[in-house]
Amino acid sequence: MSDVKFIGLDVHKTSISAAVLDEGGKLVMQAVFVTDAAAILGFIGGVKGSLHVTFEESTPAAWLHALLKPAVAEVLVCNPRRNALLKSGNKSDRIDARKLAELLRAGLLSPVYHDETPTQTLKELGRSYRSVTDDTTRVMRRLKALYRSLAIDSGGKKLYTRRRREQWLNQLRQVGQRYRAERMFEQFDLLQGLRRQIRCDLIQEGRKHTATAVLSSVPFVGPIRSALLIARVQTPFRFRTKRQFWAYCGLALETRSSADHQVVDGELRRKSKPVFIRGLNLNHNHDLKNIFKSAATTASASPGPFRDFYENLLGKGMKPEMARLTLARKIAAISLIVWKKGERFDPEQLKTQAA
Image (cartoon, rainbow, N blue to C red; front, side, top):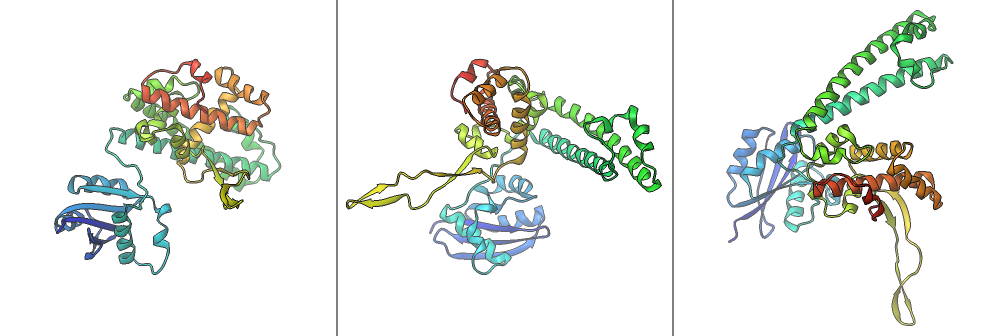
C-alpha cells in the first residue's frame, strides 16, 4: 500500500478545514482546527506518509507556505480563479477541502509562485510605498474635487504648492469648506513627507540587490521601478519566455475563436476565418502593469532610443495607444533579458525582435 497522501486545506481567518486522500482517491481523514501554527503542525504531524498539500492563494498564503514547506513533501498554493470545480455542486468548508485534495491528486491545479527569497524586506517597503502613494493621490483628488465643485480653476499641480497655499484657502469663503481644505492640505503634507522617506528607504534597500544596477540601466526603469520589479517578480527565471512575462504583467493579447475546422470534400480542414482579439489579459499583476505602462508613457514623450522606437511605430501607421503598448512590451522584454543575463542595457537590443 502506497503511503502518499493528498491534503486539501480550506483556509479561513479563524479555522481550517482539511481533507486527506490516499493515492487511490479514498477519503481517509477529515478535520477542522484553528488557524494557528501549532494546530496546523500538530495535524500535519498526525498524518503518516509522503504528504502533498494544497490551499488557495489568500492573505495568509505566504505565511502558511513558509510554515508547511519544511514539514511536507510538496506545498502547492493554487490560483482560486482557476478552480472551476469549487463553484459547482454543494459548497461548504469540508466539501471545498475535499475538492482541493481531488484536484491536487489529479494534477489539475494552477500553482501560484511562492519561494523563500531575500526580498521580503524589499517587498514590504514596496507595499508601503504603493499604499502611501495611493493615499496621496486620493487626497489630491479630493482637494481638486472641492475646488471644482465651487467652479474654481485648479488645473495642473499649482494647487499643491505650499507658497500659494494661503491664496487657495482665501478663495474658500464658507467656514466649513475652508476647514475641510486646511485639514486635507495638512494630510497631503504629512503623506508627502512620509512618501519621500519611504522612497529613500526603498532605494537604499534595493541597492542591496545586484539586479538593481542591471535593471536601472534600462532607460526609464530607474531605481524605484527596479526595486518594485525585484520585489514583485523575485527571480526572472520564473518565466521561460517573454510571452509568459507579458501575461504576468497584463500585456498579453487574448484571442477567441470557435468551430475552427470544417469538412470540405470529405476532409477536415481548418477554416481561414480570422482570430478575434479580445484585448489584454485580465488575470495579471497590476503593480507590474503600472510599472511598464508608466515607463512606456514617459519614454514615448522623452528623448532617447525608446522614443525613436515609438515614433518609428507611429510612422508605420500604428495607432498611438497600440504603439505605447508595444513599447511597454519592449521595455518588459528587455528588462527580463538583461535581468536573466546580468548584463546592462545596450541600445542595440532595440534592433532585435523583443516586442
